[in-house]
Length: 355
Image (cartoon, rainbow, N blue to C red; front, side):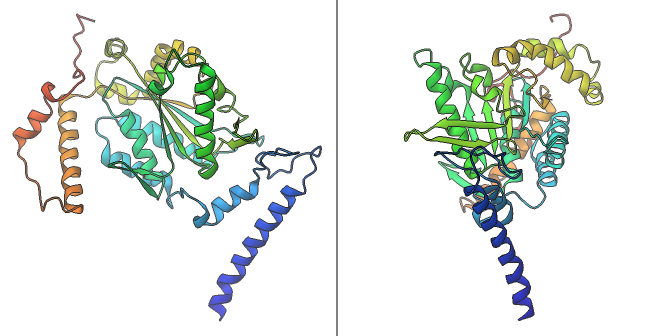
């Protein structure tokens, strides 16, 4: 009986607190100062999104459609180290930024803003894979999307979806706001992956500029004429943009060896920011990026490691799904799959005389 009561009493106490929070929200007077626990309040109709909702997410796993794992930061570090090859600078940058964000999500003055990471590098070096693995590492639930199994808290957007001259920018903006708000209402700490952000039509992302700052609130008007809002301050936004191979090669000439890149990553970030300045100004994201994460071109030996890792993962998946008992391959297959005939982007090499 003592054990039962020891579990029931704390549970009832949490339910009582939720009830008080909800009641306080509903009784809130429109012209009064918002209570400190309110995330957002729309009086006189519309939608009330209160701290009670956030409390429910954090307190009861069964209310949270995308619960975090027990130790997200450590899980993120272990996952990236085991699944990403040739990108130690990027791994360190992602883990460090997310760790800081998790510990100090709210500033001293009470303001808060989402974590906005810019993944910058040539095509085919692991930017999108790292973003997908970040979501896989920090969320405990999965969903099936076609043949893929994705983390429940991941929202994937692509710049190519918002780049049709025949469609007005306002349509793109409304669609973007709706997708983000609807996703964050059920998963406040979501990972929003925006791939190929350089392809987005001009002015489309203007609607996100204020929300990615200290305001961190995004809204849209639904079909019933009601305002639907979501707080972005607990979310992670990843903007992925490609840098031309030639531009990256010129940038790398400032470093003697690859080891120099690892030991002077802050210098590399500054150089990348110069390359991306025009892009950030076009997107109006200047001052909104929390951290620039550089992804380096891959060397032949690293491509070989990636192919080997992929085959091992494929083998394990086939065993789990009972496609086969075991796959075997030799070194010649790895070399073939790592060759330029099987890779659709240029391999990394620098000819200092030709740059």
